[in-house]
Image 1 (cartoon, one colour):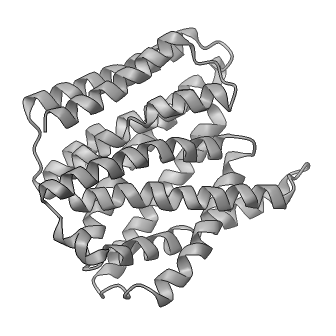
Image 2: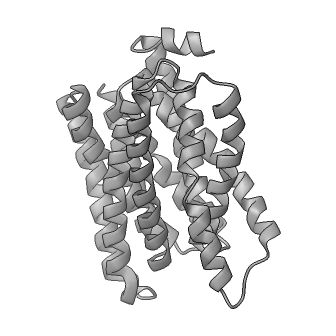
Length: 300
């Protein structure tokens, strides 16, 4: 598998595989976000998920894949720091706003800055038609933000904070997407990066979640919480792993933009499972974000 993946990097086959991986990541990332925002406190859920995928990744990192080359350790340190800040901002945003408010802004803001970062770091360029797609995507994002500010009365007191935090989180989505792409390309075996990433990345949030759980007057039962964490860990493996592999096989910017079709899945999940009011206007604006992603792919 490793040899085949390396052999298709930068080829038409690699482009098609990257497309499929990015779309799989889109669906699974919407599921992942709903898990964190769902039944439990977002901090607790994130801690349970991180602990689960850290424990699942450790045997592979230590005993299965080749160990990282010496130059990878500073890269892993930077990856860890970037992801910690991203997760803190994400959990904070979910405490201030509804899933269907926060998620589209986070996931939609990231691609613009990822495209810019991919140009600076990897020399990737977009065609004029692809930039049209980015513009459509941004129209959906900021249209959704304006709509939320005008019409959402239930969260009026925390809406500005939620949108501000969502925007900052989106910046770190771009940063980690671009830097992770650099990291997974810097090692000979991409599965080495993935296994060690998940083991290292899961270290801090369980500590934060555990301290938060101990301070709660009405603590949730740990069993069901950890079951959600195990399921979320498996989703994280497939979601983050898929998009990271897509950025190794093909253009980082295109993979990042295509992943943001997750906004459509997020709207459905928020409406069906989290019982959040979505409405036709917000669905249309989320669809606009996804349409921008499709235009970017068609113009490539």
